[in-house]
Image (cartoon, rainbow, N blue to C red):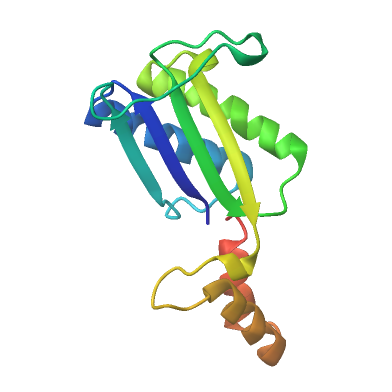
Length: 150
């Protein structure tokens, strides 16, 4: 279950939605995230009340089309999977929202099952794992398999 935050400079709600769909499509395509597993915060910055700061670090020239994508997800992906994700996000952002790939800045933060509560004040991933220990291959395992994309 990835949690995604997208911050874009000078963008409208339609473009933010397109960016959200682009990132979600990339997560589904490259990491096998379930299509209905979408949790995103989409924020546009106007340069007056809020803004984004950036430079040309590592020789990548960025401009006002900058988009920051921060993804928090459970650990376990390989470097190759992450690289495929970054490339797919840049491709889909270009196609869906007209963002130049050089302006797509992505970070991934990984954590463990204990770091998530998906509602009701419960640690669902831990509860599912404990249930699997108690009941073997029952519903808990199927729940974890459904969630293994996130």
